[in-house]
Length: 69
Image (cartoon, rainbow, N blue to C red; front, side):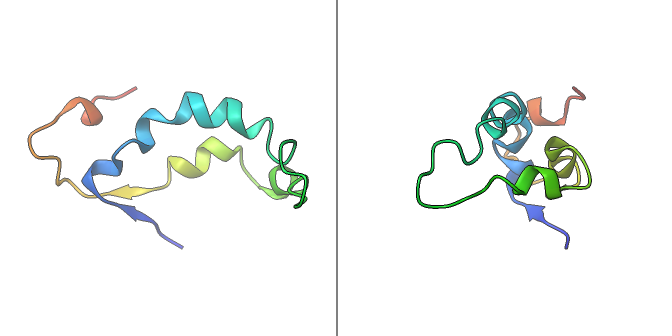
């Protein structure tokens, strides 16, 4: 599956720090569903999947999302 994000991914490029730490707690705060097998079932580190998104270039002149990390 290919995921195309609008506006150069919006906030997605800036979520790596938040998502990285948040995924460590995946399932630990949800009493009614078991997500414990999600991370172990991934073939790559979860942040690598965000690097596979495609993004359009409708940024209305903003360029900070284009700068390499």
